Length: 447
Image (spheres, rainbow, N blue to C red):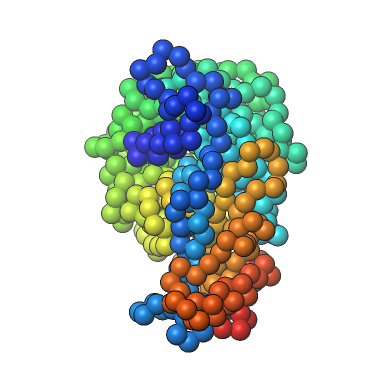
């Protein structure tokens, strides 16, 4: 886990700790998961979304080009993981102690899983789409994986535990009969599902296991670690099969192609390293990012790879020839997580600034920016907003009233722009953006 992310989570816990004070590392007592509060919306900073909406003449401060929409709802909790459902109809978004579920056909949130055991750091839909695995835990205390039914969003069975620190990664076998996870406690585990029987625990790494991938048949487990190495294990026999060595820095990201023949790793070194899974030889060592890579994933058909980086970009790579295709920009801070829609049309990225951005793969065009605040109880009722670069937005009632123009001139011009901002509340236009339709920048009339 990147030290910066640990710091973000810890600052969040301490800033919202109960009246008794922040959590103290030196204390002999360990916090109960139920004693940790949900984030309290202190609304001390603005969240800014630049747009190319055209304002009434003279309504913006001098030098401004388009309307910058603002919401005084920050700071937002960092987002650590993203996952599209196998049919692309759901997008799961993991933040501190909560996972929001967006329905992509309607463009609306439909559920939010809350009161998890500490931060949610890993997500994976079961290949049949019927369940969602959520990994996380309390740093330095315990980690677990919980499985949720995707119709009711209620937990299925018992939590898969045993780790002494947070779970950083979780994955399924293709048949959904096995589930694996990697932990900050330097180990990886594989369970049988739905029995919950632990098949093996792997302790060969000397540092945190940052990522895990199961082969399509579920018989091989690939792990990446902050100890600079990746490994391949035999799940049935429990032994080491291959050691992938050559990185000079920690490995934060690992992905296995859908056919199980290609492996990609990256981390402190900003290049992507491609491997032959049978020989453990490097087949490619591509540059591109300007800072550490935090996540990498293959598209469903293996034709593309997406990576997320501390350089504030998401990048698209050709899954066959390993060459970079385009860089996706717009994030204002480190990008921790990336996910590709099953049809390869869209890529979602999110991270330290607490916002999810969705781009078109074919053009690199930013389509949507999503922000939300975790509720205090399970359910679809929580505050959220979705905004487009053209200036249109959709939001929960409480946040709709808070949207304003940050770069408004003073006086009468500000009043005219305020009226224009109200006209930008256009759920139908936002839905078109979800569907990939082209939109024209909003003008003074709001059309």
